[in-house]
Amino acid sequence: MFSVIGFAAGAWAPLAPFARQRLGVGDAGLGLLLLSLGAGSILAMPIAGALAARFACRPVLLTAAAAACLVFPALATVGQAPLMAAALCVFGVAIGSLDCVINMQAIVVERDSGRALMSGFHALYSLGGFAGAGAMSAMIGLTVPLLLAGAAVAAAMALASAASASGLFARQADEPGPLFAQPHGAVVLIGVFCFVVFLTEGSALDWSAVFLRIVRRASPAEAGLGYVAFAIAMTAGRLAGDRIVTRLGLRATVSAGALVAAAGLAFATLAPGWPSAVVGYALVGAGCSNIVPALFTAVGRQTAMPESQAVPAISVMGYAGILAGPAGIGYVASLTSLPAALLMVAAMLMAVCLAAVRLPDR
Image (cartoon, rainbow, N blue to C red; front, side, top):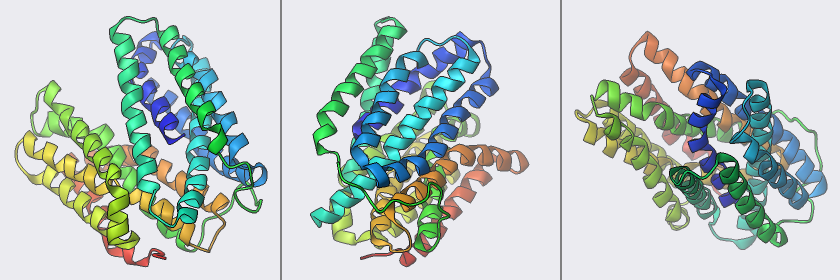
């Protein structure tokens, strides 16, 4: 199911330019449409967590997967902005629900197994993203009609979801609780850490190419290498992450990861030449790779809130970092400079490094 989420998100990315052209909107218009995707995800997470607590993970996950499959072909074909906004909102609701509830199940599975598994789960999300983006890009390159390409992606997601159904929890994930619960205790700290790390990931996605192109004078082809290095290093780090967490422990994994990411971002920002920046972004990806999986493990160790409320809370804070963070970086850059804004993110990562000692480690 982690792979399904990544596959869906990765397959959507190559469709975005076609949606922009088909709808006749500019960058600002596309940005507003994409907000509906993020808003749908954020609104769905607390509701999905409460539903999973009341009715179990399986029905919520399979319903959300079915919604993602049904709406995905529309993302490739809808030609009116209001309908596209509605389709993106439904897609966001489905992806946000899947993301939240499968992490709830992953926490229980990891805890019951008695060994580190979370980084491996999140690595499968990353691999699914590569597969989805690659499959959709290949179909576009072969001039497959977009409706047919979208239907093929939906069919692949449906088959994978059906194959996973027997392994999804059919029992309640937790005691039923309110739809919306204010985070408190250790959950607030974990949520703030998620916000910072997701903000860092969003900055790499949205600003690395801009930084390399404008500040480091890289060519258009070279400018994209920063995010490529980031994504590859993050996936590799997660594939090795369970062994790292087992050896270092949860707190040390978060602290060391934040330190490496902060150092990488500072190096990318301050070192001369675009190749140095690419190396720096690889370090950012390696450092960030296992922080979020470790934070979800920490949710399973805290006792301040039930998991059905804690997981949506930190997921919402993380998604807020992805949505608001890159825009905030742009605002700070307009007041100072882009390097100064990126160094501010590095400073936030250093704060995570120093505060990680307060995480629940057992």
